[in-house]
Image (cartoon, rainbow, N blue to C red; front, side):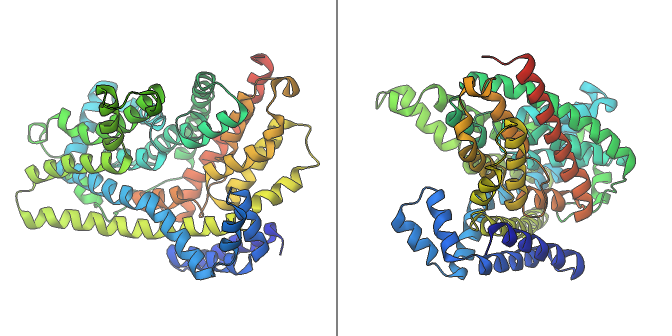
Length: 478
């Protein structure tokens, strides 16, 4: 059966289950993944495995796997990537909220930039954090601050949420060292310095376009603050009444947010600057890098951060039973998010196994004239179909790799990398794990997430295509 038809069938199933049957998102995504997997043939699985770089023996073995095994493997793969991070980040967020640390950070931020500039503060800080750190982690670290400021000005809650999303999401696909842009730069032979510089220029422009949309959407649609499993709106209001001297010091309040960023970014930068293979065994620098590699792993970095956050919580809540309840509630909330995001990842992987990338490649074969718009559309279609920005970028660069020569393009291939990155943000929806993380952590309904997340990223992606095309003409770099 044609891969594009299977993808459309899977999309129809998940929409029907959620909108018409009103099933829980976890069940809806799992059923859609099951239907997609049932429609996928062994031949499609075999060719997908070969396209993914597996040997012929491994490809044959994968194509012979039972549907149940493939579902379990896909679910486990997604859960393995995000499960620990979500659990620890949920603990950090709950501890920051209940200890008063998040409120302390917000109060200090308001003194520094003023209440009128709160949205710009979220925009710029999340953009800076988004360069070394994955968006999911950035959002988890920022959402307690968003809620603390949002309860002070509920009419701007959606604006603060969108500014955090707009700032943090684009760096993931435009600026190394995140995997997508790093791989694309390598495949196109783009110098990392040029990739980072142009990525920052395009990223800032695109983020500003997202900010304009956020201002418009905030006026057009209301987003009420709702209770979430980690904290109620009433508790948020009570936190604002606490005296400043009764809150933790600012340095330790902000440490659980900054520490994982510094460790993860430091690990990435040091390993890029000093490749382990180039160092002498036993040297102090080699030993330091080993230590940094250990504590700079996202799971370990967030574990250390969670330890500090729990210490803050214990100083505020002297009652051990209350302390345990906060942690238990945080983990229960995280468990639901892990289930939903893992089901979304399972659905996405089932869509990938239809070999949709090759199907899109064949469709694009007759339209090789307008290179930048073509690359953008291909990436956008693949992203929308299977949910992963990184997979969309890797698949598209495989399709477009024949156009990487500057002489053939007429402009520097970095702009091809930019439009691929921007295209990977188009129309994120229910097969994207970030969609469900944002939905659950903010208390949004699905239709609200589409307004304040999916539409926002679509506007930003299109803006990125336009600015990249303009720059390729006025600054070809050839």
